[in-house]
Image 1 (cartoon, rainbow over the protein chains, first blue to last red):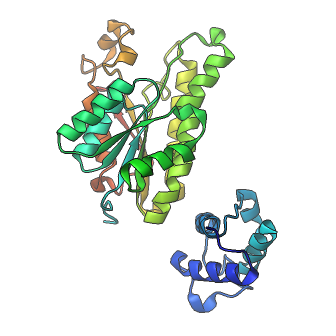
Image 2 (cartoon, one colour):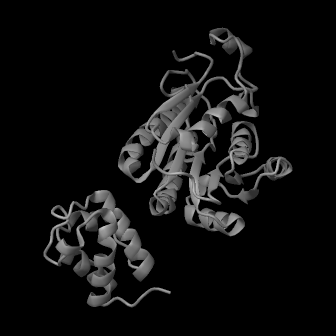
Image 3 (spheres, each protein chain N blue to C red):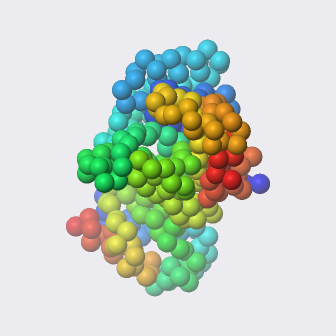
Length: 82
Length: 246
């Protein structure tokens, strides 16, 4: 059963997932860029998978290619669910 | 050394009812993999492969499904239901031939060969990366051919598909190497199977080893590439061809 999409729920899932890709927990903010966090394209593909499993929201490669910051990712998931 | 195969890991071998695929399924089962023996038409062959694995103390299940039909999710759901564990090894072995000179190859025969031998391998690879990325462990082995890297008149479609498979192997290997997933190919030469029995025995004269290979000899290479011992081998193509392409 997919979790209901709210900005807070998505933010929590994204923030919780990023450390497994090597991001420093203290540096994870909505404004942080994935480049700064050393999160690469494969990491983002995996993050998309986690989001799909959790919320049932499918992100395409084109979508993911455009996002730069953690906040962008959260907003994208929320907008796709709406 | 990075990673050891998780307990209960499943290997999906496509086109495993006979020939090279059946030998690969048996070899992987002997190495401790739980094996999904996929077949399209030869149910009896697939069942015999599974029975042989079980007789030897291994774990296996038959898995009906045409890999060319583009529904990997259905196939993977069936595998997980039958064998429980995640698919952490994928052997893209299913292949078809529709030989003709290029000038005589119909579009339909081009599409069929490319779809089964190459596109299906891509779709299954894409799907299998999900559990492999999660597990930080995976083995993908694509059964290519000496045909593709080298010419073989009458097989433009087959050669294109097999050469494509080697390109797919190399690129995906780079994409996922840092997650403990290896992607390799084996390139069998002239192997004695139903699929090759109509080919001229003259072919043997062109093989330095002066004999056809056996399916088990290809399976041994796949078994190695799927093992923990091969953790640092990725993106390569292992020729099993009696020296044909050297």
